[in-house]
Every structure is written in structure tokens, then in C-alpha cells.
Length: 306
Image (tube, rainbow, N blue to C red):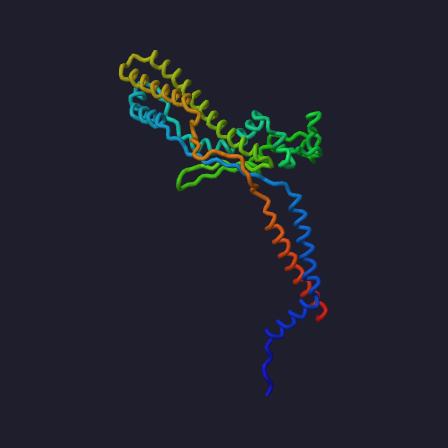
């Protein structure tokens, strides 16, 4: 009687023999890939990450104003007067504005960060200076010299700067459970990463504050005109109460620099890089090259046998 053959055992033996026959490829190719990966990873510049943890401030003036406007809306309609309503929560507006093209473009221009944003090449840890790519920007003549393909120009446009900043440099995340907001910057320079986070927080607080103050001043002017144009005592009382709430909004806005976001954990200059992960790059190169080598040996063996 003949014994049935064990195909798995035969395949395993064949696989071992193929690997043994090509053992120098299995050893040499991953070793060469690891050397190349080490060289490439060492050439990659370090990226540093600085972040701040923020909490939204609770503003009561908007809710009080909305309550007053709602309470006396019927009386105002009878008199043919439209009352200004309370403002919506500024937190969602501020988060959306942080990510908006208009705010980011204005931030880049106002703070004068276009060159370190678009032309930086790496951070020199010895001199603690940011190195600028000479093929992109000439620091001597302070002119852009990069070679760009249309529709990009020699000088980065607002849209290009916004896309780079919003997609590769800045991140804004919201913890839906706690309501805390994290604003982070990743850059070659650890000093600039921290500085830009501070500037973003200052600018968004100032922008929303100026917006609310401007609207409150417009509302006060409107309400004062309504006081002069009506003789109803009750309606005049409503207008005075609304003016009081708008005045309160202005006073609170101008009294605190943390108008929308209160800093819980401020940004710091990072000591350690955030990326690249050089060890993972080398391990991935060894693994993938080894896997590709084995696949190549098996394919070659199959071709020879077929």
C-alpha cells in the first residue's frame, strides 16, 4: 500500500530550499536596504511640535441679551421696532475661524511668517538658527528665487501658503467629551512652533473680541436712535436694559485678553522632535525589502519549474 503524500511538508521543504539557495539575497538585500534607509532617515530634518490646551470661556452677556430680546420681542413688534438678538456661542465660531482661509492668510501676512513657513529647510541645533533654502529664498536680497510650475508663482500665493499652513503645520482638535481644544504647530524650529501657537491664540481672541465689540457698539447706536424715536416708557426701558447688556459685553471684552479661549496648558518650546521616526523607517525598509526578496525568489523558482 502507498502512503498519501504530505503536500504541506513538501511545500515547506521546497520553500526552505528556495530560501537557502537564495540566502545571500535574503541577507544582502535587506541589509543594503537598511543602510540606505539609515542614510535617508538621517537626511530628513527634525520636525518639532508645540501645542496648547484651551478651554472655552463662558460668556453670560450673550445669553442675557437674548433673554431680554426674546422677553420684549412682542412689545417691540407692536411698536414696529426690531430688537437686536443675542450672539451665538463664540467657541464654534472661533474654531471655524482658526481653520478658515481668511484668518490664516491674514495671520501669515500680519505676523510676517511667509519666509519661515515656505522656505525653511531645517533647524540648526548647534547655532539654534532656522536655515532657509537658498534655492527658494535669497536672504541677501530678500527675494524669492524658487522655480515653480504654473499655476504656482515664484512668490507663494495666499492660497498656497494657507494650504501648507492648514494641512501640514497647524492642527486644531476638539475633545467632544470635555470641550477642551488643542492647538498645535509642527515646524522645523521648536522656537517658532511655540511662538506661532501663542500668536494664534492671541490673534483669535483679539479677532473675536473686536468683532463682538464692534457689533455691540453698532447695537448701542441703534438702540439710542430707537430711544429718541419712541415715547413708550416700557419700550424705552427695554432699550436701556439692552444698552446695559451691550455695554457689559464691551467691558468684559476689553478687560480680559482671554476673550474666547482660556489657556489651560500653555505651549512650550519642545526639547524632543515629533518626527521623523527613524527607527521605524529602518525597520519598515528591512521588512519590506525582505518580503520583496522572498517573493522574488519564489516567483523565480516557480518560473524555472513551470
